[in-house]
Length: 105
Length: 245
Image (cartoon, rainbow over all chains, first blue to last red; front, side, top):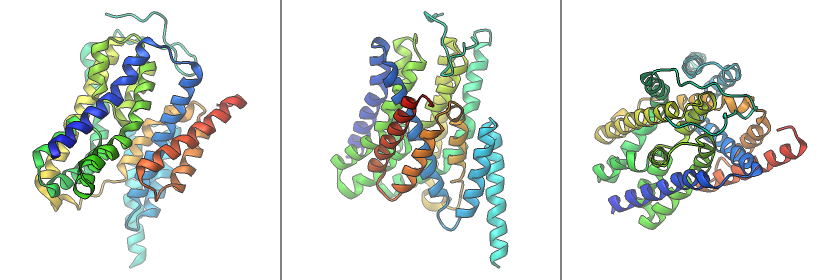
């Protein structure tokens, strides 16, 4: 049964991925629809950032997560590279977690 | 080599620089390199899915989803819902989560005007949140269609290979790698990928989406995600009407 479910989800996902790429190859997208697609895609990615941040904050790591995300937003706004954002955010996250742990003792 | 009928432009309306002078290997290397931080970011998630696959039982079928589904949230939902509510519910729930791929694909269709059909079909299998973002970003600064193809396929395959490895390790190791805590890397990577969008004055959409995502945080993703999209689109439409977006 697992094989059938994986194959069905895989096939359905492929249709979801391929259909707009093939349809919009021939049909021009109206400017308003283009803007809506862009807004929707931005909303989706923002939602993923929020939900993954909440997940990272589980288990009492809310302050380290907040510190890392603030640093990440600042660096992203300054067009820093992904490696730099991850390195700085990760270091701050670890630093804040260690500092909080020491304070709690 | 294929040529576009008109010079492509970015959202800001500026002409894009062609990148056809770069050697083929550089586009492939660039695509692969762009995926490396993403592999690090998504590796813990891959281990979690691998662990769920191991708990489910049929490891090979579960692992095959790493390439066939190529999407963590839908993959995990399919495996877990199959155990809890049966195959029909598993398929519907996973596809609902992957409905967002319609948006990514529509967005890339605009960026890939002039690309051949074979590439659209191959690339379709590799579209997911991070590959959409890096593909969009690359297409916005590189107008050469061949380079775009090399970059995207290299990025998608590299990410897929790392993803499949992570799920495989998780499936074999089971819960023995649960100590690895790298959850913070995912939102940081995604932040880096949306930088261009923030600079395109769509900050109103981002702000409204953040509020909606926080407000719907306790809901099931198949319900909360469409709600956030509706709020984001409505905010964007209002901003467009006011001429500020």
